[in-house]
Image (cartoon, helix red, strand yellow):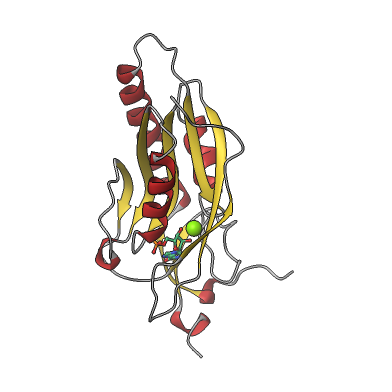
Length: 189
Ligand code: IMP
Ligand code: MG
């Protein structure tokens, strides 16, 4: 139950203010786009957060969107190894149907792209009115599969392991209000 210590991190990539500004920008842009797409305002928008990393992002982004919408959660887990990368397990599915809904898939970070691809393939079979993806971070140098991403918060040029604002290492750091590069000594033995 000890507090986090600054020497667990190499440096802070995005501080709380920078993240909140970006989330507000994304919220305004996405709201405007969805309003255009649905001028009569009768369609249902479902924000689907990928557990567990998208939770803080989902909470803040939803409050930055001036639109009626519902929340759903999808829980995926990757169990890939070096000889079989990108194996994704469905831990918990949505509780409601997305048929005829506009799905806004929310992800904390896109790394290889396998998790997002799994979610998109799963949802496409369910006849939604549309699917768009929004991720806070895009770790481009590590992409292994092509996935469409309509809204991106920050593009990471460097391949480094980051934590905070939903992102974890061994379950910790998700509750940090900022995003930091984890110091290699924390995971290299
Ligand atoms: P992908 O399937 O390789 O795109 O992996 C996406 C998932 O890997 C994310 O939802 C995160 O849970 C995890 N992940 C990838 N990179 C990082 C990181 O730098 N920090 C924390 N989690 C990460
Ligand atoms: Mg995740």
